[in-house]
Amino acid sequence: MIIVATFCIALLVFTTFIHYEVLRTLTVSLPAIAVPPRTKLIAVIFGAFFAHVAEIILYALTIYVLARYLSLGSLGDAHRFSMSVVMYFSAETFTSLGYGDVIPSGDLRMLAGAEALNGLLLIGWSASYTYIAMERFWSDGDGEAMEEVPPSRAARQRLRRQRHTAVFRR
Image (cartoon, rainbow, N blue to C red):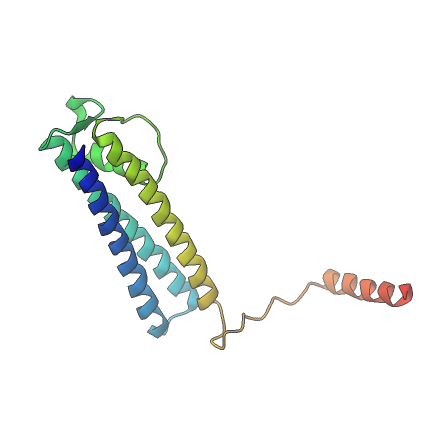
């Protein structure tokens, strides 16, 4: 149990470091690149996605080592145990999808819980960063938001009627 708890803490630190470095690199490098804002946003999405994939792989490798070499638990059937099953389980757990077709046993259950919580936090971090990047890249460079789309003809007529009605209510 102490071995798995140590791996949980180490994975929390490593995955946070990976995520921080990817997002920091995007923050520093994207503003300097002369491409349209939509392209920068696509880079943010792909950067966050690849960070999550790296974190899932890190968890999967740890689960594989703990189950295969240290015998600290298993995933589902021992006959089906493979790296592909471990990767599937790790992605399913990291995203909190939880189909339940591959179930951990032994001390690996604690690692699965830590991975689900860590994945939830890192996915939330990515969502928050993406929102901030959208605000930053969709501005005109002076900190002002881009111009709004002009209102439709019907909206302009409705606005005139409201103003006209407000004048006569006084």
